[in-house]
Image 1 (cartoon, rainbow, N blue to C red):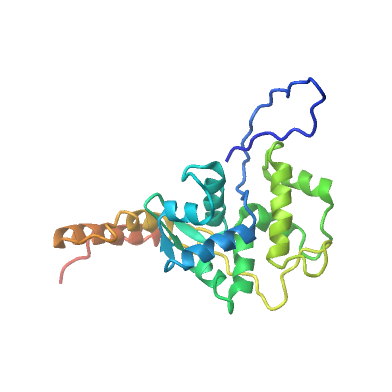
Image 2 (image 1 turned 60 degrees about the vertical axis):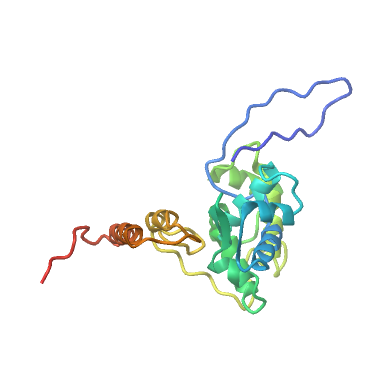
Length: 243
């Protein structure tokens, strides 16, 4: 994800200096957790899935390809709340719990810690005082956030930490909210939100959802799914021997 450099000040008659764009080496969202939760509630109102153009309109964007909308979708996926692509978006397990008041508090914790950068910072400061603004940005730089993106990364991190309840003990402490537990780590090959292993997900995306299956098409697709599952679980990929 590429961010446009932000200038702090430009004097009268001066032209902004040309700045090079740089890429971060670690993933983080540009939308906070509250924005993602709002998007999840929109999708939940449509039965838990929708078309991207629907969500774009519901969130007040004029164009489907606007940078602001793409950032919101990318953030929701990074929090582990939405999955899918151009053909459709759907709530994940975390997303469904996030819109359920009985489970929303724990789901916010899981969503927050699904972000690689946030998990690293949380792990680094368990039982310790939170760093100040400058120290936090320096830490993010060490984790791979680019210089041109670090201010935005820090601002969204702090907002999301508060929204997820991690700052309930005070702004100087980053701790799990009361009544929640640290989420169980995903197995290797899974995405942070507990989605399917990537090798299996790739086959699932090929299914003609919403269309009629032929017997041959289903047999071919199901064989691919079995092979992908065998590959993920490191099982033999050959056909089982007959009796």
